[in-house]
Image (tube, rainbow, N blue to C red; front, side, top):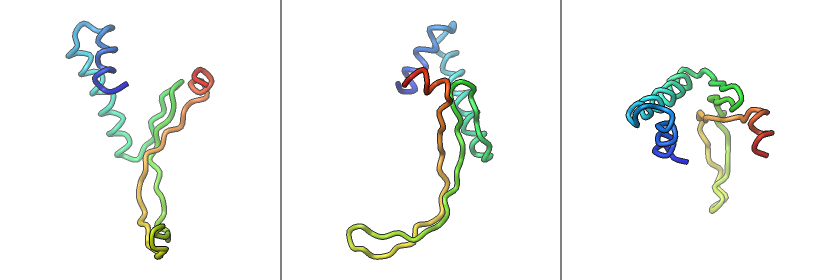
Length: 89
């Protein structure tokens, strides 16, 4: 499901498609804003989004075998809730 399909599904429960699009945008922007502040987003029954930081480390270029420095970076991780995992799997 992509964003347009999500808006279409939500619009079945709202008065207009524009209203559904505003709701979806509001939810996504709220999640993005919270993650930018490095705070986790926990949605009960669904899962938790979190920003994790990886440390800088040494790695190898698989083609040449040369040692390279891999810089530290931030990643977004998602951990599925127990309820959702049980329901789907």
